[in-house]
Length: 269
Image (tube, helix red, strand yellow):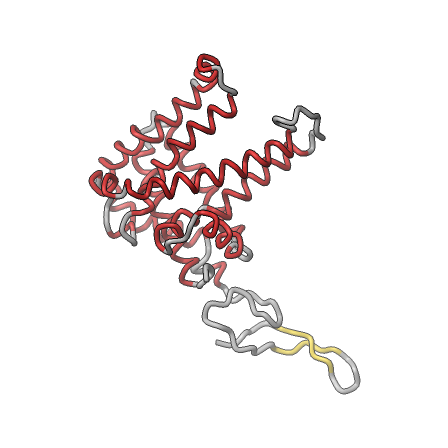
């Protein structure tokens, strides 16, 4: 496939004119390395919208097959996290532990439980989740524990630098929104790491570094993926939590599908 973009070319008299690029493109190219023209990958296979629509089209007719697993994972993991955060202040005071430290210790233990489904057999949409699959995959808990630990340490570093936490110093208030943006950016670029750990057998640090490199050209699409899922799950939780029976398994499937799209373009190599 050749690039249809335009590039500048100098003529014999020194003038620069626009000519068709015609550079031979690699099959996994996202942009032309010569003229910078997009190959259409970000509006096609790597598009957040396209992946969302394709996954929803396949998931909608079979969503009821995921209900039993959804009830299980919501009650055993997500509900515990929600209750822990809600009562965290009282629990931290009763245990005489710093509130921020208590929340992070709780998340370090519970969040890996929500990541276990990412170790299920590839192509989530083809194999509706079963509770037995979850227990068979608990062996991955230690790896997910380490991944969550890496994230917590990074967020702790941001809190120290942007709020003066632990140091007991006053920082410029502008650093608070900076911290918020950096947290969103981190979540956006690193969400495929959990699948790199199970599919490519990477350690958490290497997986995070690979995600950072891979997201150079797709970070905005990844942001749109996470933003859509965030809104979906908020709406799902608002309906007495019943909507989570659909939004939770759909979230797992969409994340895995987008990881596959990134992997097909060899962005993790």
